[in-house]
Image (cartoon, rainbow, N blue to C red; front, side):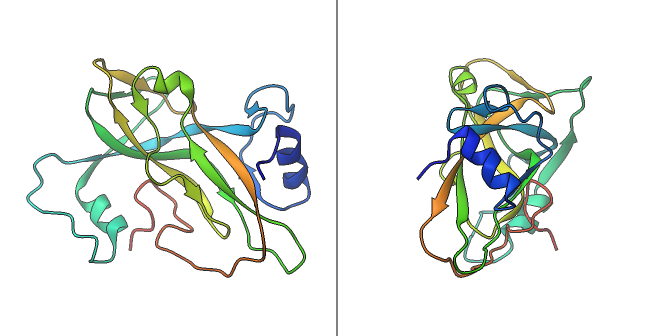
Length: 192
């Protein structure tokens, strides 16, 4: 079951999950939609180096460290946006940190899906593809894998609404299954 805007606020007030910082608490205005909440872009962008002399092999653990190692970093601010060129792929994350704790027996747990926004999709910007699930037990900013599929450059500014979070009830009590991204602090994940 997908939560409505008011149900999102109610569940946060009850401590079922958190999204912070959050701008405004009026469910009829930004950052809320009828059944989602918009999240903003953080400040760090990882740009994988082109022609890096290696093939990615996911059988080896530590994709977060590897991505951190093979990427250039760019820090955006209001006066220095990041220009996402056509056909360019980058990794960034949300300004907001989310926490979907696994709660005690008898208490409702939640998970979420991160989805793009139609305003960006209509500009040819894919914000988060192939891995939209935010599992129960996850905590941290949400990593966004972005690519510009348009014929034009696109400016990314920190704090712009970049994606939407659709929150769902988890049926049954989940068993914790930590992964390399839970607790992440930056776009690459947890870097050793």
